Amino acid sequence: MHESDLLSPHATKAIEYLLAVSYLLLFIPFWRFVNGASPAQAFSLGWFHVPDNVHLHRGHSWARTFGGAVAVGLDDFAHKLIGPVDAVELPAVGTALRQGQKAFTVVADGQPFDVVSPVDGNVVAVNEVTRARPSDAVRDPYGTGWLLKVEPRWLTANLKNLVSGDAARRFLDAAAEALSGRMSPELGVVLQDGGTPVNGIAREIDPAHWAELVRKALRAE
Amino acid sequence: MSEQALDREVTFSAFFREKVLLGMAPKTYAKSLLTKTNAIFAAILAIGLPTMAYRFWKGMGAVSHLSQTNPWGIWVAFDIVCGVALAAGGYTVAAAVYLFGQKQFRPVLRPAILTGFLGYAFVVVGLMVDLGQPWRLPYQFFLTPGTTAVMYEVGWCVFLYLMVLALEFLPAALEWMGATKVRRYMGTLTIGIIVLGVTLSTLHQSSLGAFFLMSPGKLHPLWYSPFLPIFFFVSSIAAGIGMVIFESTVSHRAFRDQLDPTAHVDMGALQLGLAKGGAVVLFAYFFIRLQGLAGSGRWDLLLTGWGAWYALEMLGFVLLPSFLFAFAVRTQSAALARAAGIMTVLGVVLNRFNVSLIAFNWNVPDRYIPALGEIVISITIVTLGVLVFRWIVNRMPVLHEHPEWRGVH
Picture 1 (cartoon, chains in turn yellow, orange):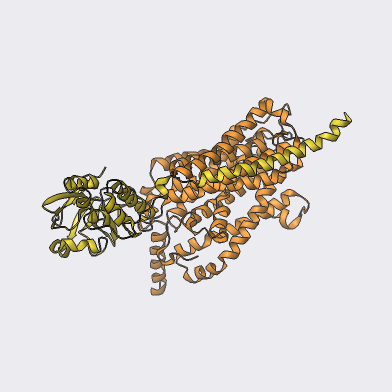
Picture 2 (picture 1 turned 60 degrees about the vertical axis):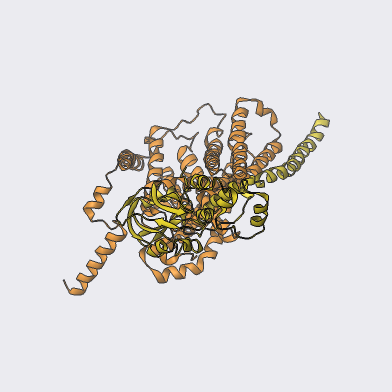
């Protein structure tokens, strides 16, 4: 009886210390687990840029609010994937556009590529400068390279389906990552050297089936 | 009427229409209130408000099952003890943004402070319902201060912190009213107010736990511990994080039109940032709770029915959400973080119910079961809170920044 009275506070203390030490020891793997984000997140090529105020559609068109209207264009990734553009076929002012359905067509090397609209609404203006000199748009795809201005119908709801900010950058990184797997080793070295990707990546990757590659990327799935 | 007075009247009615009626004509505004959700709210209030009035008129015996043996029921357990814990998002996010420099959480700061402010305001409403005779409220502060009572400390803390929360939220109201000068002046006080708020929260989140130190024989040994104040404080941080994740999710669905389409807040990334904090806090909290058990040495009780209930709380609502948060951060799954956030909130509610109700008076034959009136009044108080929250969010810059005050403290 005396013995257990004497021992019990020691036993309690021992358990308390044991708990404290186990906590500290277990915290190490726990913290490592929390911080070991998946490789897809750690991966960032940063080849393609997108400003914070631009919303991207999965089909690589973009939307930017512009007073009451929304400017629409083709994102940096799609421009660089397609390469020099010969012509853009823009819808007439007044045309009704639907999010995820064809908005305009880009022609490169004789191949037409349909691009989907990022928002619902009616076309209120088209960029005549870009229409006249379409290959210049790649220099400033989100600024002077805009293609249409749309009066949006369900902007708030539409924006829910678009990505912006870090999410947009992650989206472009993922698109770049998908491409990098298909690149020839030489091209990979050039691109991953920190330089900007060549204009017309699709043709560099697969000269025979480049148009299919572009259409797959622009498909809004 | 003079021309000046007429002018003033016209300006005022335009101001009222713009700010209060959301720019609608009174009739259109009244019509816009006729929705299904509002019908439910109206039904709750139609039953709840008279019940509340009846309680003040006839006394609490008329609507509750409270007795000398069980003087604390769900008004204390839910409206006060849970209410305070769930309002902890305000001080948690304020401390993260202003004291620890985690500026990325700014978009959730104002909603968290508003939730905290209304949470506390309605804790006081709950307290009034429980205590009765609201006009005697100043007695405990000024007329008959009981300086040695835990209640005295809690009363002061809630009173002061409610004022601090009002000051923390005031900038949003001032921006809404267009009171530029006062708003600018308030900006210079921000840090001081935030420090005061975090200090007061630390004090009274823990002193709510200290309440139960006064009744060691009444609380089941698995929940009773001299560390109760620490348990309450640490778990309030987890509750705050869980509530901010939950509230930001709900707000982003319910108040979609209030969001600034040009602001580009990546809510998923923010919630994952909060989830990381949640994972660590809950992990530590689990071990701190075990220390409490080690201190009492009553491991044998784990094999009883109460032990199973204790294990459910500890494993299912502390350790599991901690791991879910961790897994959410690792896999960058905001959806999982949201689920873990809800579990954390439920876990803290379960803990507060256990300490103040379920495992309290566990050994008396006359167990308390809440009366319908008590439940109705509790639901009414929550409904009033939600209605005020909605009224404010639809008008003031809470979920979006006021265009003229972008990025200002």
